[in-house]
Image (cartoon, rainbow, N blue to C red; front, side, top):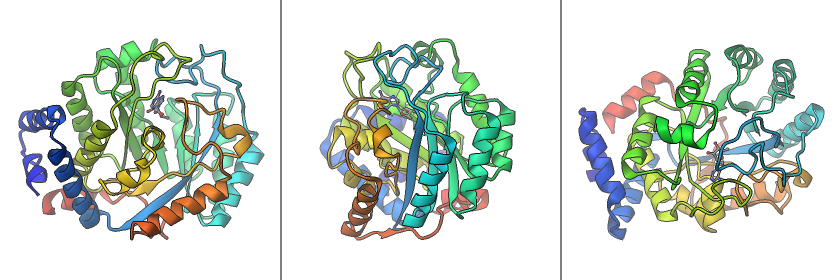
Length: 353
Ligand code: 5AD
């Protein structure tokens, strides 16, 4: 547990320095060792089960202009869609019947779906007994409150980068502190909170990446998602290069060492760049898979980045393939909803490992 110990130093400046050293190192053995430690810590803290979360991407309309994202409002090449609420609920019911324990509702920042419409969907879906995760962007605190009261369990909102300058450059017209304020609101309201960042963004430095990892830890996230940046030709960053797979794998492993308690997905972005991405994720710190259960006629239109994995198969096929991969790796599909661990348990894990 050499690297784990190194990262436990109570002095944050020391941890930051260790992280920068590891991020700038290119020795394959260091990556392998980090992955092995991450796998062991994953086993000891969250066990060998894999949580499967079905994601429904219900609208690709977006009011924002994020320079990396294919759904940004300025991209007029996108065929936009909105799935009607009753069809979203029907899709969620089918997924619950298939055995999924968590449904994730994700969309662009699309205020067509009002506070009440989303609250009603949450209430309906909760009747099936599944956990509900929302990922619909920055909204007023009162929206977050209404959805929590309707039964939503979790919320995903990535901070994307911890560097305020880079954040503003990538997200015209908004600021990092607004995003962090949303995360605080969600925390206050009792959500299990997920966040994270992209790897390989233009202008990103090892110092910034170390800051990203440290911010994830200081937010004491229940869920942490890290994935490579993938350039989309319909965006201002279309000509930039993609994040490196090995760097993404290293940062996934470091995320596990820094947040032993957290649920960490093997992200779709990783498997879009690397065909073995989900397997590499699960063997290097991750314990969550998120098969796409958006009805296939909409799925290819949710193009955050090009060549997104999983656009072709039916939801059932994707779900089955997910279950098979888990079995193949000698792991088990979790039968519980996979809620975040309690603050007390998280604290204990931090001290005990
Ligand atoms: N490459 C990789 N990830 C992206 N996201 C958005 N655009 C891209 C891209 N071009 C990620 C962001 C966002 C999540 C839904 O998808 O992290 O939070």
